[in-house]
Structures are given as C-alpha cells and as structure tokens.
Length: 235
Image (cartoon, rainbow, N blue to C red; front, side, top):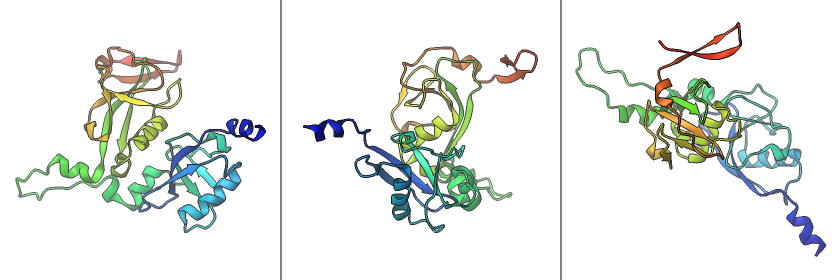
C-alpha cells in the first residue's frame, strides 16, 4: 500500500531527556520524539513548551547540556541523549547550573570539625556529589589528552545520561560513546559499577582497542606550538 511505504521512510522514534535552562531542581523529563506526530523542529519545540512547563515561557531553543550547541534540525536529535530547553534567555550549561544553584547535588563537601578525629566516609560524600572520573581515554588513541569528568548525582540515575555526558567531553572520531570500559577492556554495564577517581576508556560503535593506557594515566600533555602536535611529557 502507498501509505505503508511512506510510513517506512519515516525516521525512527527517539527518546531524549530534557532539562529546563537554569533550573537546578528540575529532575528532567523523558520525551519521545515521534516523527509521525512532529515533523519539524518548531512543532517539537511547541510540544516541549507544554511538556516541561518552563517558567521562562515558550521553548524557543534546544541545546546540548555542556557545550550548549543549538539543535538546528529535528534529525539532529540523538536517541538517549540529554538536552536543555531554553527560551530567549542566555544558555546556562547543565553542570554550571547545578554548581551555582544547588551545591548539594554538585559539589557539596562535608568538612569535619577541626578538633574532631572523625573522618567523613567517601560514600557519604559521593551520595551528594556523584563521581569524578580521573581520566577518560579515547579508544585507540593514547596521544589524545584524557578528559577528567565529573558525573553529578542526578546523572548517575540513568546510564544513558552518563554516556551522553561523556560524549560531550570525549570526542570520538566514530561519533557517540556507546560504552565505558576499564583500561583492560572490561565493559561497565551501569552506574553502580562505576568507581570514583578511576580511569576509563570511552568506546563508540567500534571494538575496544587494547593499548597501554595505564602507562599514560599520569602523563601531562603539552601542546608544542612548533609542530602543533600533542606530545606526551612524563612528569
């Protein structure tokens, strides 16, 4: 039937998570992008206005959460990714919003009393802060500077959100980050398996490439202006 053929040509349905610009207390909302219901970005933004009930009024822009890249077309949306809905106001990246407006979710640290010998448990600290990746390496490229990434507590609730945030920080040549692996190639299956202050390798659709990442975990990278290449410098 002609109608069936046209339907099969439609892009696949995607699910994304949308946060409100500058609102650290908004938990985010899962939004299903169905091309049968919305065909343009403008019509989708109208749908978002009702869905997120933003205090700034109509949703006029959609940004990536950290770098703030503006979504230009509906096809640019990636399944499982995180975005920030904004109006006409200035964009505020998601991690800065949490840091400025809600330190208990982003960077809260318990300081023991000076005369007390009580040591605050790391589990208590990270129940407020989330997790910090000491180094996230690019799969197959030990000369690419590793990224140090803070994963806020609210992001850890969704493994898809964790991978979306890592994708924003680590730019794989193959595209989005699909997996996180330990330095020896063991895949991480969820947020509960993550450990604070550890090294990981960001992997896309390609296979994990076993390289001596551990030999570079303490290396500082120095950009030489003479040849414009990243040179590993042992400290």
